[in-house]
Length: 235
Image 1 (cartoon, rainbow, N blue to C red):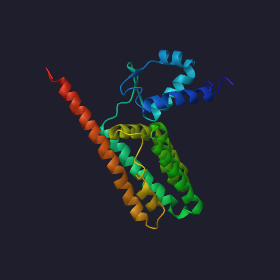
Image 2 (image 1 turned 135 degrees about the vertical axis):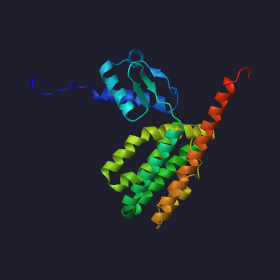
Image 3 (image 1 turned 30 degrees about the horizontal axis):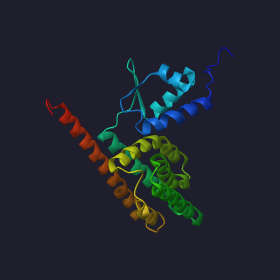
Image 4 (image 1 turned 30 degrees about the vertical axis):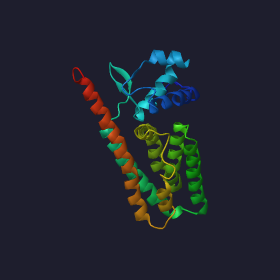
């Protein structure tokens, strides 16, 4: 056995529990962008050992929510306009491919599933008190085409992107000042997804996502302007 390259076994259950605790704090903004995360403090607060914590941190670095810099430690990722543009462009490309792959696989059961996902999101929006739940259900709604596509690598790419989209949706909620999207925000999305014109669906994806991007970018512009005002002496 001495000649085998075996790595230490990590408790996957603890690792997943750590991810479950840390990820919502990051994507909700409770752990602020740029904030440094000290491994010793996290281990103490979470009541875990260093090994599964390090694995969880690596996972969060891997999906882009944390940044690890040699000699400077681990920080919550700063999100800027370029990040938003990259999330938008990749999301459009992935979701358009998902619809191309799933288009001929839509049946009555699949379309009923899509309607049920939208109804669950609408119910949460109507209650208006759980923004995190609304984000989870909006992601679940958009996961439909990826799941239906049967394209395993595409679904993996989508799953990998979802934490960044969760963060993006949190910023979007802040930009709009509400807990989730408007109730009717996905009416056209469902109509096109259930229709007969794939080209119209693909075009709608560009418009649907571009509107959200522009609103969130406006928030960034306003925040940056506020910071510049604070830098002016005597203001």
